[in-house]
Image 1 (cartoon, rainbow, N blue to C red):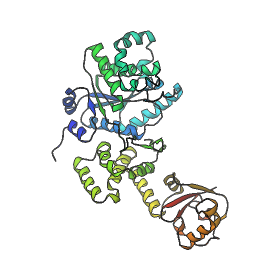
Image 2 (cartoon, one colour):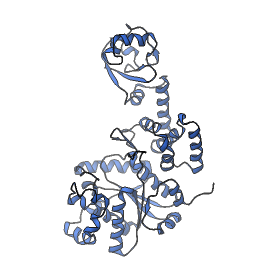
Image 3 (tube, one colour):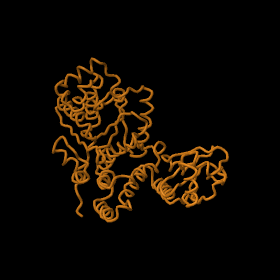
Image 4 (cartoon, rainbow, N blue to C red):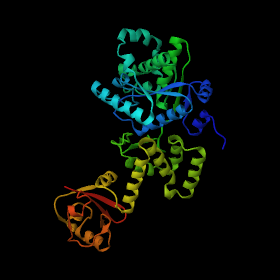
Length: 411
């Protein structure tokens, strides 16, 4: 298949929602731009929701553009307005801790240069802020921005209202000091980006550019990577490779090809081939596995992917050979767990912990070979369960039927 230009490839992958000027298309295709993406230090790790923005930055870098990651040591103290509520303020100490975590992560995973907007904001006094920057912003213009409009009824503080000026100031500073002519972000940042473009035009009479990509969501509009109210972190100590693997494997069929386009470096031919296999045999989760491999390998390395796949296959099949207690506890993090003290009869274990609803049901399950512990069928209701049966003396994998699993933890 004929090779696409960078911009055409970004469009094919669904990574361009809007650009500030048609002139940007040719500049993207030629290479040589310095651009930045930003993130505020609300946590000491980025999450999978950041990942798409960082991938688009890697794509630009591979085509000869220079990425800068801006960590908002200043803007993080204020908080970008949320659509429906004010963000909780975090302390300066928390911000500094989070900055160090994000900086190391960005350098280790993505290899980006990192800057902190606190460095050029901290010495600006309030009068200079109003005279040098505030005078370029019309209140009507600011009120028209979507993020501000959505908060007018419920209320928005002056601090949050000023956030777009701070972000525009960042673009101006990097434009003047680093020849940074492009800002890239998710679509929810369009208002802040265009404010920076306008500030550069008004103050310097020069043109800068912006490009935003759609937010990655599921078919219901829920943000990618949000699971039971929690983020999937890029730090493997916060979210393991196995958890990422399980999340990807469970993604809906209707969205999986979209995710492969947006979140991997697989070629158009490779994705079309995976799509063909996926349509023919969706039950094999071929596309989901391809996504899991791409993301985990990119973030944590091939060894971590292999380990995640091994744990998943072992727990699914019930063959726990080669798995450590740590592997099992990691893989069964979301499975109901029970604590086992000392010795207990199997029948009591099943009934007292709600694995079976009654002694009668427990006996029926045992007689029909429907109960297993560490992949060994259990039939004797009087069998003593203790740490001698546990893997490394710590954990037991208890199965009831084909689908229900429980994690037994020896105390």
